[in-house]
Length: 249
Image (tube, rainbow, N blue to C red):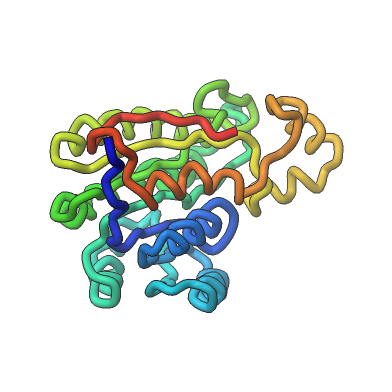
């Protein structure tokens, strides 16, 4: 069976100023799809957009958006559509971590992590449903984590939020798959991103992280992009809406 051609509709990537988000945006743009970059940091996302635009042959739009505030989505999406048109793909890479065990974690800190990592993924997907269902080959990718599966005592809110992403991906796939939209999750291990920069500066902690990985090393964003970026960049030969669940090494 011949694979179907890849879609060419625009893709929204959150957390796109650095790390896995920036790497995903790069591989998506290289596949020929316009990219919308969102990040909380105005200067960083503007710089990331300029770097990508300099090498990409597709439209690139960068905007500072706080994804923890759903009331901002409508205006920010309208601004994106006015430049690139309806959105046909979504990769939610925005994420925060709080290294506080449950015995000392405040309710406010718990909410902050879930708002960015989980709630934003759900409500942004909901806001994009009219766009996604109006185009052939649309897809959504949620970034999970190895800690969604094994947990870690120091980051309960992060582990819970990423486990929630996996459950939400299954639910969204059940809802949107019959409407032609693929929904998948990628579960990276420890990746050298700004989120882990402080931890990796501690040689002992970095060695422990590497020791927990099957390949005995901390991964790089460019490796994770091969999974998460490709989910959105191309259409696999399987039926639209397949509820695939990948773990990136």
